Length: 322
Picture 1 (cartoon, rainbow, N blue to C red):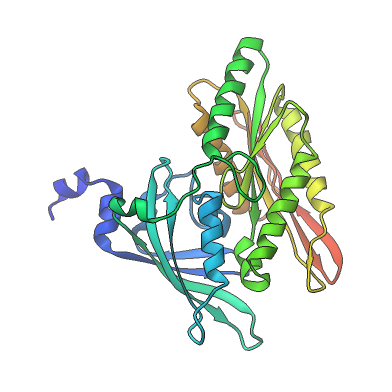
Picture 2 (cartoon, helix red, strand yellow):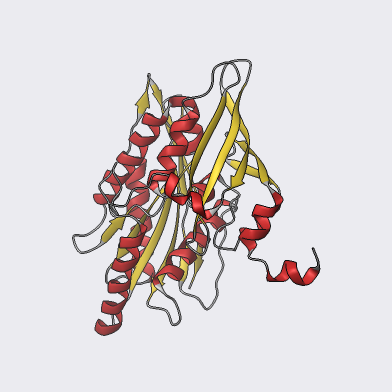
């Protein structure tokens, strides 16, 4: 195939032409090592490096399908197989076949996944069941399409009333680890509890939705940069108070957040969501407390909580851009 033909092919066509894409998923680190040209799909908004960045590309319905497959392994081989819809950075839906194996250590604890993604033809879209209600069946919260419509309305109101607003993207990290160690019901319990905690932190005229498989989106009315910081803190404290146990083992809850203040010239609702997610994933890759300033009014504040031997400890990382 000549160079001109390669340049004119859609990125997805190139990936399909290469066949399958391999991956190794480190459950402890929640890090994915891709083997293949998946980087051609990537943008700064969707790095697909952490587990939650991949879960971010799945709707709640498709996320639950994938997690269920991880708990119904084939005997002896510990293999899983699942077909679901992947949402690409441009919001295009693509059917994929996910096949792999869960590896266990000598103590019987899962420590990694190794598998392949095969991008299927679009004519198979109808063969994969989807949730068309627009609402997450587990939490009852609206999903991304309705969130985009609502965010558009909030932006219009902010422009008319000359009052800013903010959007926060939040992910629950290490859900793959929780599913493989405790089962899919434990993962659902974590999502449900985090959703309830978030509902308790927002005002009556704010908005919350299920933006993806592992996360939530929060739209804050009448909010500036410092109001966004205070909202991060309220949410972090609410997560800190959560207690979830399975078989007398306390499940650690790790969350990351990224936020954007609006309105901003040239920023559509989809771009605002994507930019908040970008800050979120950048914060996941940062290991030290950092501070930075630029001309953009945005920020991210990841906060993670770990439970060890019944004692809660937490680590904070913050980056501010004002």
